[in-house]
Image (cartoon, rainbow over all chains, first blue to last red):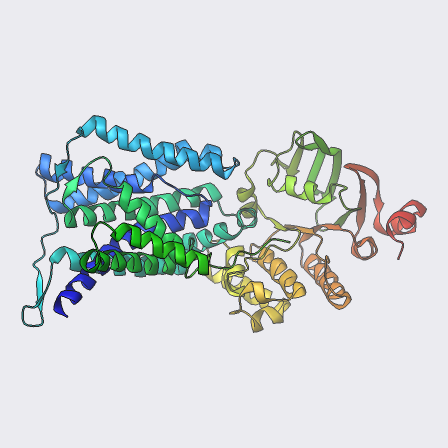
Amino acid sequence: MSSFLTYLINGISLGSVYAIIALGYTMVYGIAKMLNFAHGDVIMVGGYTVFVICSTLGLPPFVGILSAVVVCTVLGVVIERVAYKPLREASSLSVLITAIGVSYFLQNAALIIFGADTKSFQNVINVPSLTLMDGQVTVSGVTMVTILSCALILIGLTTFINKTKTGQAMLAVSEDKGAATLMGINVNRTIAVTFAIGSALAAIAGVLLCSAYPVLSSTTGAMPGIKAFTAAVFGGIGSIPGALIGGIIMGVIENLSKAYISSQLSDAIVFAVLIVVLLVKPTGLMGKQIQEKV
Amino acid sequence: MENILEVKDLNVYYGVIHAIKDVSFHVGKGEIVTLIGANGAGKTTTLQTITGLIQAKSGHVSYDGKDISKTPGYKLVAEGIAHVPEGRRVFADLSVYQNLMLGAYTRKDKDEVAKTLQMVYDRFPRLLERKEQRAGTLSGGEQQMLAMGRALMSKPKLMLLDEPSMGLSPIYVNEIFDIIQKINQDGVTVLLVEQNANKALSIANRAYVLETGSVVLEGDAHELMENPQVKAAYLSE
């Protein structure tokens, strides 16, 4: 029982990282109607930024985390401006291929700069672990910080969207870009803001992910990126609560499969569950019915 | 009379299709001007070009004496142009209140916005009753009222209305046209695009008749109502 609880809590923690990444996918999809496959690689850039600031330069952790957020936010906006904005009127297939191109570009740029050998990531989250149930269950500091961060991000994001003009503009743009323009909303600026927020979240996810699994390479972001994308689809792409629920369920299934079934099969099990969910409910758990416009 | 809007030699293409051909017209301050014509005559395209949703190939649009042909669409709202688009295009997933507040997106003064909101609720009491309701659940007539209320939230000087009566029951049609007249009496200039030529001509000062992308007739609205050509083509009941 106590080991089950440990696996469950760790699963929720892993799922929280997926959820934070999935929020970026789902917001960008909701507003720009595109799948940003380079999103996972922004996580890797966040990880390397912390590595350079904290391990190479020896600066304190909060400087590293802050730098990662700044670097990723700027990177996200630049990617959107340079690679995606010129394709606003292009077919979605062109945009998708471009996104995959940006993903490979980032991975190979990291390979050139940092080399092919994996770096060991120095944990920047120094929080003592918590012992529960007379020492039977131990929750590490990183795990607690991860779950807490996810909750705070979700609350913050929901408040931002519901209470601020920019948040309302994002909702308007996601529904109808033309009508949003007629309200006086600058659609391009709103899309840029969405990329900025999504990339800042990717930086935080990068820090949390690398603190829990302390190895860093140019493909660090690829698999978590794909899983978080899966989580976003699983929860219903475009839906913020969907990203949270999808992420947590994915993380829990993955961790429990590793513990009780097979660590080699865990990814296969996760994706099998996705396939079943999409067969039963093609729009995902929280997804809306897609209405044909008349 | 001073012109609030002047359109000169406008040409718009959809790919190779020449949709708007050398269209020129003007709207005087305080007027109701209507563009009438059949489906595909280019009425909606004209409005969309004015507010920058479509780029013109050539020609000029000036508003309040300023050339706005190259101004991005989103900047025109703050200048005082509100466009109520064809098919209403309310934000279906958002509440009536959220839709109205998005109409005031470019305005900074919260107290003034609150006053305008009160004015819109006074004009459209049904929107007040349904303010928490999702816009997508409103009836067609209510959505039209919401689209017009949302446009009024920006405190426009010029309102472009695209087919406000489309798909509405006759009771709503009358109500909508009454409201357009009231909005105009409050000092808002109106450029109205309509297929319901009878109704449009009955409330307008002047009218232009569009046929396959060109202006073929123009003049006083009441005179046009008596014009045998217009009668035969657009006023047959």
